[in-house]
Image (cartoon, rainbow, N blue to C red; front, side, top):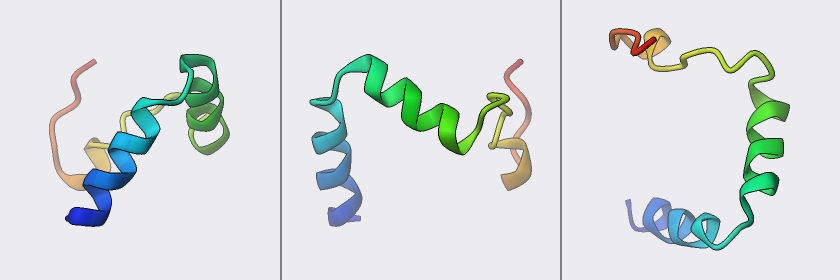
Length: 43
């Protein structure tokens, strides 16, 4: 948990464009990943 919080704080300092590029590399179709974890889709 502590590592996740530190990582989140680190990522908050990144530029928005860099974050979007990172997301698109891992999930190019912007699929709702919560559905795979058993949560309802928000879209």
